[in-house]
Amino acid sequence: MDGAKARVLICDDDPLLLELMEFRLRAKGYEVDKAMDGAEALSKAQDRPDIIVLDAMMPKVDGIEVLARVKGDPALSETPVVMLTARKAEKDIVSALEKGADDYLVKPFIPEELLARLARLIARKSGKR
Image 1 (spheres, rainbow, N blue to C red):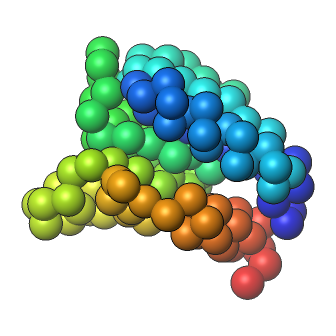
Image 2: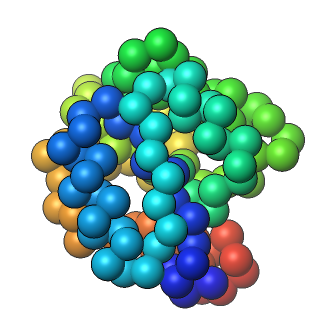
Image 3: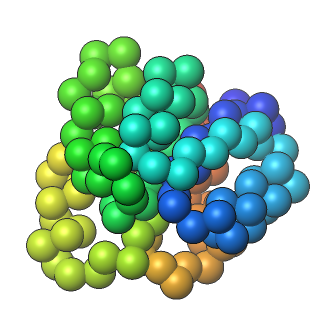
């Protein structure tokens, strides 16, 4: 999988960020699904996306809890998760990585950097380097 047809689940409570990311990802050939809160993210994760982009601070269920549940679910545990959040304290980054986050980016971010990181993780998941 080279990014074309890979399914990305973007989870963030900022509608503008969701719209921007959907536009950028679709332009690169990704299929995109969106969730605006943690409960919706958990529900849509059951559809087995190829990768999840997850904000830490979301309503209903926070992103760190979503991360822990995804990584704790045998059906989803191999799904790469990229944290994309305004939380930049060392304890937040370390906590997310310890709970299984595959990468961590702090907002504001460079969209092309996120796209490059997603492509790398999707290629790794599909067995390519």
